[in-house]
Length: 126
Image (cartoon, rainbow, N blue to C red; front, side):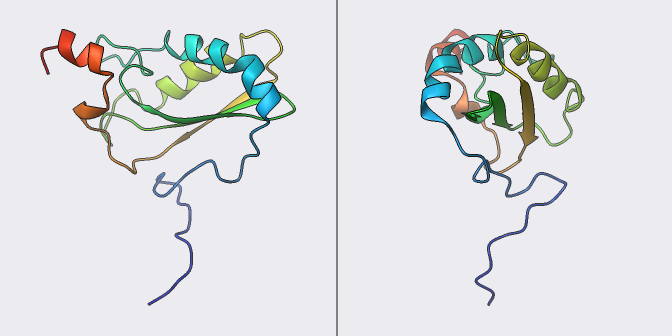
């Protein structure tokens, strides 16, 4: 049995942001603005923003003010799989001072309704 780390694939399996060096000072400067911008991006199938929906797994901000977002989709067959990352990039790069935004999509762990913020779950009777 191989002890090698799983390879990253173009399908988005086993992706993470381990290769991104989060810069604490820069992160603290921008993270609240990034969260607010993520809350303006909606999954077209559900009336909830992607942040509260639990689609955002990790956000890192580098020293050169590049935001890296690791996210998932509600389904591997999500019809908005191309649009949601573009919306994220558009919103995040609108933050004054941010130089770029990169989005990685992973399907691990698989999204489930339990990932929705509890307050939103109760509003949806889930």
